[in-house]
Length: 296
Image (cartoon, rainbow, N blue to C red):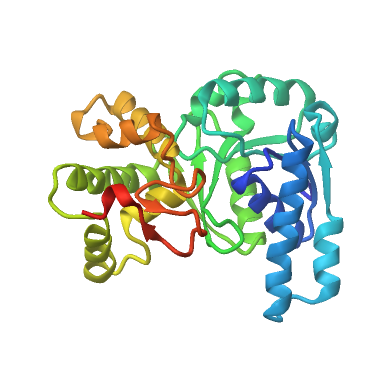
């Protein structure tokens, strides 16, 4: 299990590529856009430079990590000799199903196909392949190089052998894997997203403002980040997508996304990625300046 491919060079994809490469794996990082690949390598380099400045790695280790990463724009070329593929594309079911059909066609017969999905059914993804026993969820947390948890999700047909291999591989990355079963939202987002949605409802109903809601949760519940701040960091479009999956999967009104969340996404207020969500991010995500629309 030393030859890895990562599909998608966005925030999660470059983080996953980073941790595999830093742990000595040969990583093919694949994206249809060369510009996205270039940006990903720049991000990984910047993060390695931070580690170097803190003397957590050496210059030689930085260069070794970067040398372990090869960028490609072709899935067919990038996965043909890999032991494991981790898909980290946008949280869109149609896109993921298409990717897994391609992976099943081009990856070798023994290759394990993992998805970093945060909410989409592993069983459904596996159903478009001829190797459902080799399909598994490998849900990393953002930011990947820092966060220790990997949620390992077994689909209906995922084999014990594949599960053990991915659990062991996660430990080899210095992560702490937790095995869960395939239900909407798994564990992490089944609990987290309704909390975020309830925080948005609380704002929508005028119970309190953005800073007040986040302060209560940070100081009262010892959360490192308030739920509205966290929603901005995750992306409000991602939060909405997951809430819709929970709502559809459970058919329970308690999972219905807040109208404010729906409207913000339609208006393009997606959080840090768009520059504004519940907070103003035009000066960077560390500033967390309250956006004008939510000062009162």
